[in-house]
Length: 64
Image: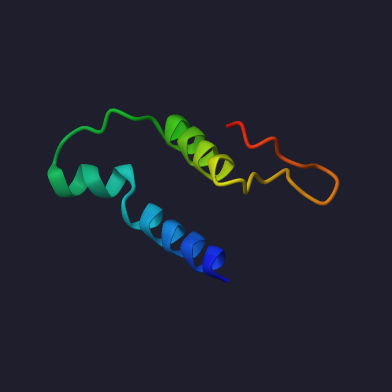
């Protein structure tokens, strides 16, 4: 249950703090591409052992 709440908080924060919001709020150019932002998000969920390809048959070695 705690893990679900923590995941929900992380998702909300990642939606609130995205490069386009930062760019418009600070009026600066963000030095990260959408592709890199997506890769960082994938690494983040891999790091907390919630990769999208994990299931009952596929287990993680927890080595992101």
